[in-house]
Length: 339
Image (cartoon, rainbow, N blue to C red; front, side, top):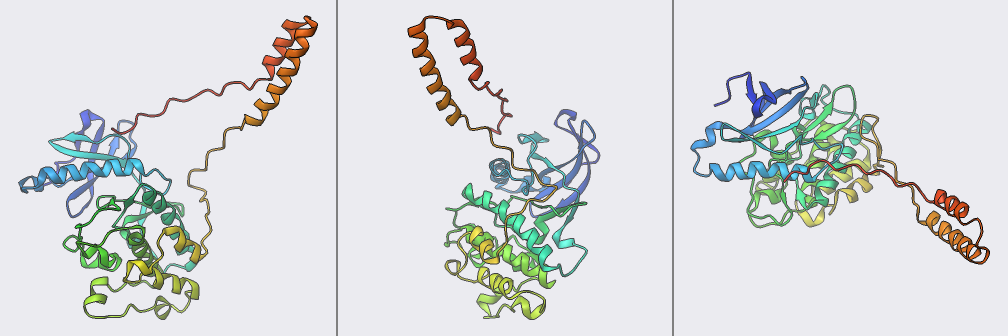
């Protein structure tokens, strides 16, 4: 069951207007805030109330907010505030990304340069995810949005994200046939530990799809029926040899044989960090006053010694010395963290 729309939420702060999508457990609504800005509201499907583990699902759902809050990056969807409760359902307010996901891109086959540009951005985002000891577990074209009017890629949907030490988290009963090609074999296991190499496989599968227009053969099919994965260059001869080798390396069925980090794989592909004109710029560094303070200290010591012996112009010297000191930088109170 879904809400009757339009529906006021969070004491009138938001208005849910239409349904954007409905997945395994959740429903995503397009909403507006009090200023008319578009946002996204994500909540569990109300039909899950009859499930015996509904409370556990609610808890897992709220945990997604904390995972998102830890992973702040221009290429990761933003959480707008703390989770809130509506009709006994927890809700997440997230930024709305106008654009199209890569599963519904206008071109079936994406030129290599453009595809690598998207992969570089999502790779940088996953680097932040992995720095926070998380694995996204659901990297695929449908979870990568391209902002309208730009080439900025944004990683969305952290509903399956888990810690590196998580086991017994098979997704085999959750994925659809369309998603199977991006799932590494360890996600069908209840014993194999997850790692950065898990998302490396999925990101390589995404690149495979962008460059060939075809979904990779699923890891389950490759394991059970010994079906080989066609080299992407066989499907698209325009793919460079290095990218072809890089995809096959990253999609090795054995985790230990893949690149062990996103950066290792990007380095092999020779993808250099680049800043999109529509992404946030790195904030300028604050001036380093250590050297200046040292020099001022030496000058001050000399002046102090002279002042002791001369006993004159003490007030003038003090004022001149104080003007040499760096002015304090005003501080800005941080925004309230998600508790």
